[in-house]
Amino acid sequence: MGKKKEFKIKTSKYFTRTCSNCGKEIPSWYVSCPFCKTPWDQEKYEKEREKGAELKKDVKMVVKVTEENFTEPIKNVFLKFSPNNGQSWYEIKMEEKSDDIFEAEILEIPEETTLIYYIEVELTNKERVIENNKGKYYKYKISSSETENNE
Image (tube, rainbow, N blue to C red; front, side):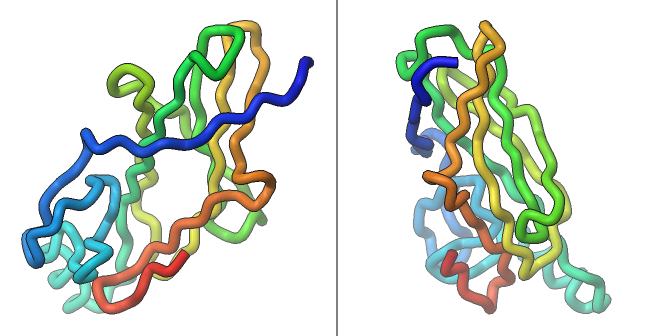
């Protein structure tokens, strides 16, 4: 292997929606509005809460990875994540949605779970390049409309 390559995760403004409660434009992969904390599917959220069921949410991760950062073309992009602080790790192959934009969805994550994750890029020569926030990983806390998402 050669010199370790670094790249930055970039979000894209192409994937946004407007919050039905406060009217602010928010990235569509957020499961609730970071301004007013309203879940995207408020009706479903309220029904589940009334039943006393464990509330779960789907999380969509979107990253921008450009081939200009590498000497070889990109073959695959993977989202690697842990819902239990690194005790177990899971891998999802990210789907290319448009030029340089890759997306993966993690389904039914219980509220108050903190996901830690990183991105791994596989090049056509089978080299794997990892972006893990310099070993600190990225974090995302699944929160309800009443709790803060400070991660």
